[in-house]
Image (cartoon, rainbow, N blue to C red; front, side, top):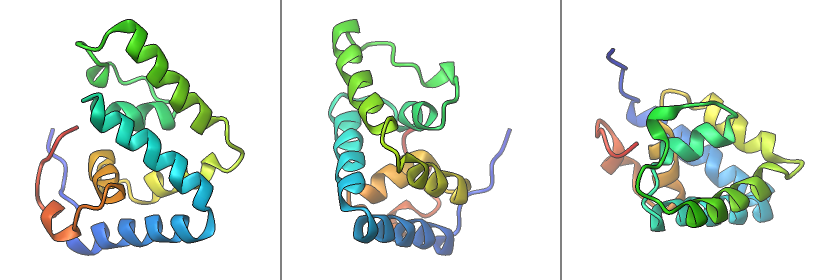
Length: 124
């Protein structure tokens, strides 16, 4: 199955949505950034985080080489984020920017430049 890559305009729109979240809900933004950073540090696929946030069961993203105790701590942090009353704002960003993958949205959160993400099939 092929998926059309997001255009640079779409990636910039996702970046703008992230910036709006940062301005309007700084605490939510910081907690999301914390979880995205944790995902990166633990070398867990961003698609797994996306599937958890969107309440989807996506076995292809399930971490295979992460100790159960570490994964349990990670899931606790994700659950703290999901229990926020304003979590729908994050889900809206993911849904609104569905052509921009979760991995690219996470990389934008971590400060990647949109031009570097255009057309790249980076990590899941």
